[in-house]
Length: 376
Image (cartoon, helix red, strand yellow):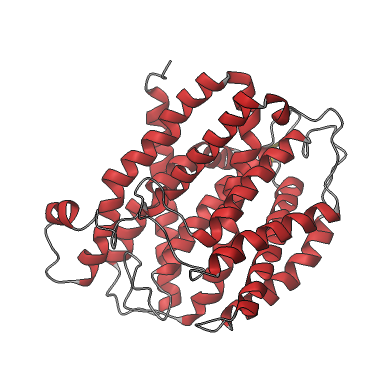
């Protein structure tokens, strides 16, 4: 039976992170079934449908901001408890090494699936790794871009901790966020999204420096949500004695029309939008993202702030699941790629198989890693 949380641990944030990572898996699977097919996706199925477009364009907005907010919320208590040196030694093993290893070893294998799944005579893998993967046209971090960007954000916080530690201390008198605070935050996110779209399409990826990979239109939003997580911890948003209790009803009343308006606007966006269209896209993107994010926080705080066996294991293995999931999703997608089967049942079957395999692999890998000696 789940047990209520009598302690200070915020189980609902652990559970929210685990749920979002499972959502990342079904989102990545859906990319292979979208019509028109995505030329850059790793495995594209023979059965595709435009029915996946609304799901993809909406889920794509909020899943990573949620991840960056949760990372930001837990950064300062760990940093201030361990100190800068111990904090970054831990991040070296938990973030930097998986990021570098993922980019150099796993991302090439993941990207190779584009050639392997589309051609009867793909180039030999070693030739692809040596001669094609590291070219500017092909190189990418796969899903490990999140770890690289997060590491840079940690460096920023570490620098602040060294130079201005008082800026990062718990506020003596926390002030609950007001409507004007969220309005200002939305406008900042809108400006951060809008400015790069004046020069690049909104979905453009940038990986040409090799040491970082990101979407310019989303970079500012990711950083702002990370900072919002820092702000939330400093002002004790979810501490037991906190005066801040976000209203599920209010955020849900905003999220429903924001979802509808953003989806309709995004689907109707022209191929070459005007500046006014781009500004509207940025504003609706930011409103929708914030309303969904806060609605999820309220839902999980109210209904999933406990630790059952399933949620506890999912939360403990969610990070490993994120790292490993493409190594499971893509082979499964390739196996059924040419099956002449209705697209929606096929998609749900692949989702069920991949979720089970990813959870099992994450659980097994987490148990194995727990037995290894811990770095000093």
